[in-house]
Image (cartoon, helix red, strand yellow):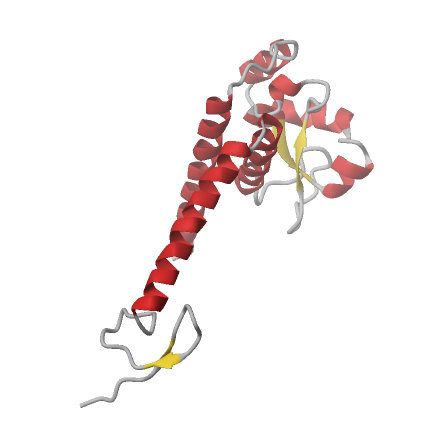
Length: 182
């Protein structure tokens, strides 16, 4: 019969011989402390979510949205200069976020753009304008042009739903990418 290897307690760090293979703490005191820490971690997460401002939620949504755009446009050339995108590239907005906040999360308005064009050439707008018409349909281009002057009307609940939506899209994209490698 095999001898049971000693484990390190997740709470106190001491060495112990487990009774079950799933045992992670040395005794009841450490188990209680570990459970309290887990409950506190959950409470803290809820407290942080409840104290976030609308601006912080928009920033989180922007991060998730940009990550999705980078995954979507992986392997495509830069929207402005047509050079292949490297490992690091930006999610460049055709209409700027500052002037047109209503198009901030419009997928037709944001495309993969090399750092040089987006940051150093301020979006390389003339070239972007020529190539965006080939990347999205003519109808979507006209719709995008017409939506420029709309207001950004998005509630806190809608922001949270969009975060979930884009996280799900990222997860699906990652799953298809790993399925294609196999």
